[in-house]
Length: 96
Length: 499
Image (cartoon, rainbow over all chains, first blue to last red; front, side, top):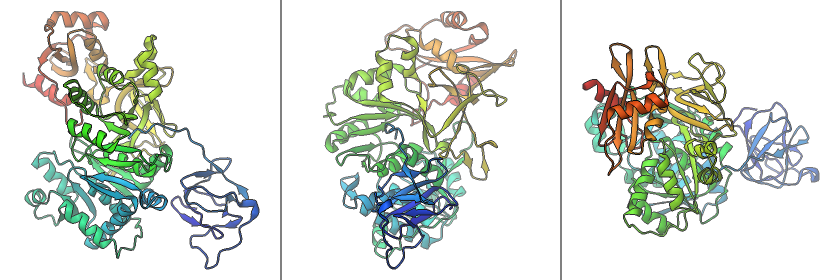
């Protein structure tokens, strides 16, 4: 998946931008995400329903995948069924 | 990737929230986004390859910046303070462009180049009209977001290129989305053609910190705006801070109680000035930011706590850190290398190299990055054992005397320790014996007697060694700086060459 690619959830409002790519399937709410939203939304899996937060970056354990949530939704993000976690960066003072 | 994402997210999260205040008009994030979309439609219709701004700061700057991004062409803010001949050369290099601002000057200097010009108010009005029918789609183009001509203090200006991926890497890596409180406000007073002017827009919009724009810096207007808009954050270059403090010392009064944080950068901060500022604003957080155009702004910073710690410390090595630019951002790597590119140990002076997503190191037609992605900044410096970076000047300013490299910074530091010396600069001067030798120029502190040449030579001989002793000494009324507070060493060198 090319950096910059925008993916939409097929089960909720979540939308992400790929910062670091992956060959795996990016999922939200338990269903694969797609570049276009389907005509009818799928069903949110209760196992992936903790929600996504706008402006948060989501990474896998190895740091190979990084997604930026650009629209929040009810589904939570995963790659190949493994949940992603938010990347917690040290807060920096504003330098601009 | 496209930086327009930053404005889109702000508009999604708070379409009705005020994002920018300029000349009495308040713009919401929604209005700014629509205007940028309208500008993109207008720009695309002209078919021009660049969109340039030749103007002071205003809402036209973010509208053109994001409009250009959506249209997939570079945004080129031009320095309106340049002399006619220098500006004409730059206009020729971006022809044919859409140019916003000083239409008369463009038509006078570069009439046959096919530029499509618009005055600021006409550009903004037309962007707002076009917004109604604009698609809002983003074009990828060459992936270049911004092109900034370097100031050219040593050679002809270079066209530095910042890609969307560089700028997004910087913002996403350093700014938390929507981290600002609803009342927070950032006073932006750096010129739009400086990298700090670009990064201020991007950072503030992504943090959703309301931008309060001062079209051109003036210390009294700065103080007025802080009070009127209850400004919480500001970025200044050292000369601006000096002028603000001068006005306060002269009796200017303004309610500055809202001011939580002042960041500074863009030039060397005199130790005396920052100490004075820390004393004058005891409740304000100070941050020193070091960065370059080619690195999308900040790569190292000295944070508020470190300022206060250094200011109040009795340990000379901790106290000295007030004169450092702090530690590298967690998202970049910094190394100090010698002339052969070998990494130097802690404490040794060399050239500052940097690597990271935000580092472009790219100019039109060539990249200055090495095979492993490291950018040679041409800044000279060293790191202490705590990882604090100290800058000692430009690598190009090194004086080579009979094959021995001499850093001007070491001589200047010694001179500055003399109680009568207010400012000091060391440069290479032509020498028949050594090829190049040391020349120094000093400015004497008001009310002090001018130190004798022998006294200065002895000071340097005792503290350093004989090769550092100046062959030529000049006493000046002031040192030459550009409007961003950058010392113009070339002019000092010319002074010696002409004597």
